[in-house]
Image (tube, rainbow, N blue to C red; front, top):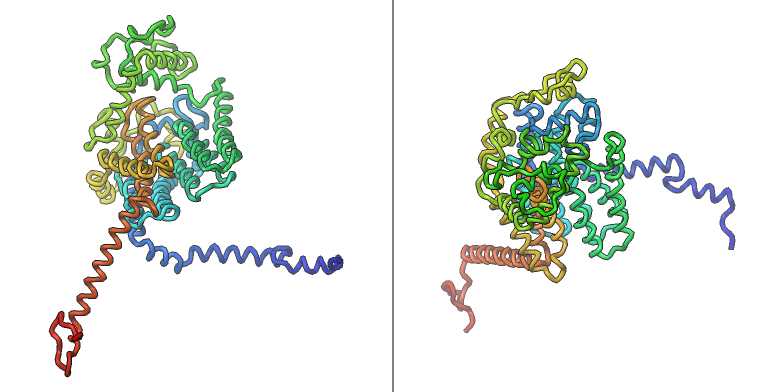
Length: 545
């Protein structure tokens, strides 16, 4: 049997949509119509009516961020902000922290304003809330009110909103990790291509904050447990390592070291200064003896001062302390101290981790730093060390916008956010309770090794333990961990879970009682039925003889 002639085949081919210019235009118009239908007013109205509570929560969160932009135009400053800005102009890797955030700032530099930076960060904060809600509802079927409740900390917390308004890497990092988590958990079994995308996002996140790579095993182990094949596993692994290796290559080209930073050892050394006793460290090399201090641990200042203050033993080396030799010696010393005093190390890590769960927020690590976490009455000044002529401007932060880099505090908008932050934030004890709810849900699901909720729960725990183990406690490091704990807690009430079934049973019983009450009320308003020979019956009397 033969097919149509060549001319006929060409005619048939040209009639197929998308095979001619007219057909391609028709297909393109169809795609545009489908896209517009997703954004149509009817679709949006239907979504809002179906998710009224979350729509209200999201709208309030949006208005709070608008108020922040209007009240603190157009950014707020933290000490680390000026280091990031110095890496932007000119763009280069940094020896103390990864410069992925500086690349983000560089991409926005042509706009010569900090407004696009903070607006994008506020949108990222809102997007994190949307992802928590969407995952809890779409994949796990949590009740609407529980899914909306899980978004309150990230959408309403005054300190979270202030963090989004700071020129800092924390919120882009938080957004990237939540995006990777959403892609991983959105379907029961992600494809290998999605696994590669997840790995790539984690790799990019590692260039933003150097805690993303330690999270990679959580994702990889979950992929293995899903049994979707080694292709997905290695796709995620290779995709994650690719941006990291590219960044290390860039760092090597500038500093001659194949690394992300020259600060890992320095920060770990500062952590051990809370307990290290050289008399308990055997076989300490001679070139590391200068790192010892004789002050008893109970009388020493907070750990981070052994990084930044000039009395640090690290300042006995030629500057900078963030260079190959001091960083290497500091890291080796820290490892020896941890191995020689494991219980002391565990105690200090546990102490700083437990501080996360305190009800009250204390002025820590000092008043100046703590004030930078608050919506203030005036702009934070540009410190002297951040000044330096860049063209005709006195600092990189001024050059970036070609103008005055100080925050313009505008009332009454700023006052509204000051009051909001004073009263609306998540106490550490409540965060601990949220973690406990997620853990309880995982225990009930122990036959499945805790189920998918294990992923966000472990991420949340890792994000609070890692700083305590490698640097020091800081309130700033807690905020990105909160949405993952909230997600795990919401998943504990998902469909076909014990806690979810319990809530569903309670809601069904409440609805039944309400329906019964309505029926009783309706019956009481009706006229009583007629009895034999037309005689009316009294309430409760039957016509049966």
